Length: 383
Image 1 (cartoon, rainbow, N blue to C red):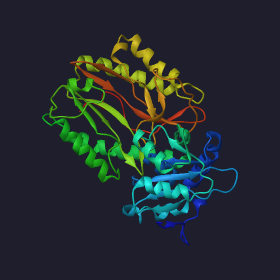
Image 2: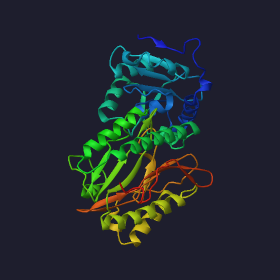
Image 3: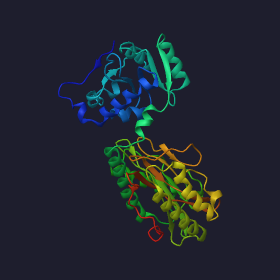
Image 4: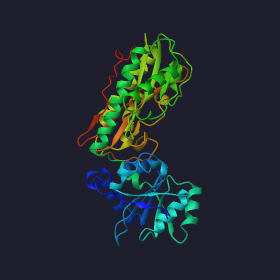
């Protein structure tokens, strides 16, 4: 049997860690979900609950109630053995000598009262579930959905601070790149410089493949940069994000190199008004659909509703896109203090170009706070 290691003497107290509180809240949810234990397989959820961001590791979390079921257990391998030392403040560590399924079977077998093991149905593949079923025969596997996401949707002060710092990193990176942008540079060149500037400032990786769209390419909301080159009197859309200690930020700005094309200038003003109106509508108790409607209604009244087909925004945290979703396409959710969301309306004109303006907002007790500081006016955005 592989050795399960607990917290060494002198390790930081679990009381000093925000992860201990998250694990406690999750454990309290498990009896109501009808499970004795939850096998957390989503690496972002493992990171949220333990602080370990290495990946390729599972976390077995025991519920509360009945007889004591022991501590959570991170199941990992030799590559992360040293990196997992700090995690021992809140969980035991099991370094597997064989396959992950065999390790899960061994750990669950040694866990007290592990009769009904919850699986993350939104993450576990059909093949993994089948393999676990064979390994854990005699125990009931129960599909659960969104148990950790329910906790992640409300950010604590430390999480908001990390998202804010990530936004500062990405703003400083773009501020360094903007003076270097000139006609004749490819989208890929600009994206590469921006991602490098974010990394030199502490971003572990870009939050997503950086979007740089010249002229008509800006009409593609999730465009992938290519060899198209910037030119005088053409527009430039940049959507970029940083990651700090696992937490994402996400912004979009649009520019003109020289004079603004007339149609881009027109829709820029409309999108900026829509973005500011929707941001002003953010408040606890408002529904996600209600806030989405503020921007959508304005753009539609200006005659461009058919050119705005995506949701207003999304949550930010360990994922670049998580709950809540500000959209008219899903069932509405109610905003609450501690949520962090993007507000990013856009207008996309095929063959002409597009404008999207995006900032990150924390829902507060009375409204919302913009975590971004970069300007949005057209004078500033003229390069």
